[in-house]
Image 1: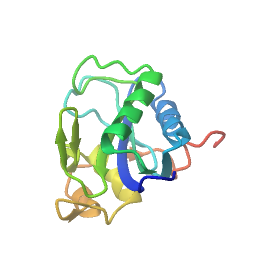
Image 2: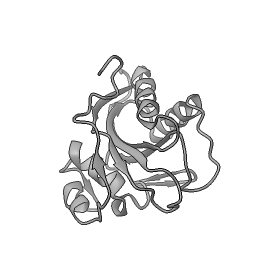
Image 3: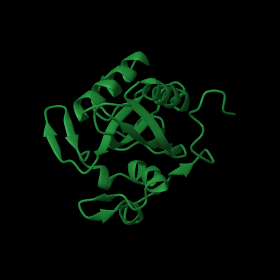
Image 4: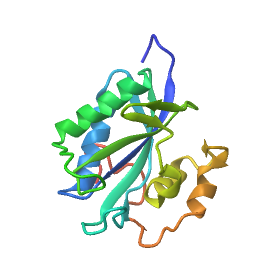
Length: 174
């Protein structure tokens, strides 16, 4: 990663069809393989009840910090490419999916463009985003509030940590 300055972005990952943990691992491996991006920290995986549309299987969710020389739009394109590579189908809002990658935060930028909003809308209301993110970046702030405080303020009922650390995504990790 040379040339452009390095940026720090935070990603939310999730899925509830097939093998979500494997899909999230493959997505992180694809992002880490990009010459302009490096995965620097990953949370444990959490089993979470569905949010929004409740008549579907539980999700698995995680968060990751990445260093990148890409712009926010370029990082979004990289995430969407990883989703396509894993056969993501966008059938219904908040519906079941094999993989979902979201840019939660990108440095301290506020972005409101078609298809790209940072900080991610409604992230501060969602325990499935805040718990994994608070595990790896508790002092990170959104709207002047620490992620750890935001995580403590949301209903985390039914959420269960299912891996013991953030190495689950690495190839060959058992």
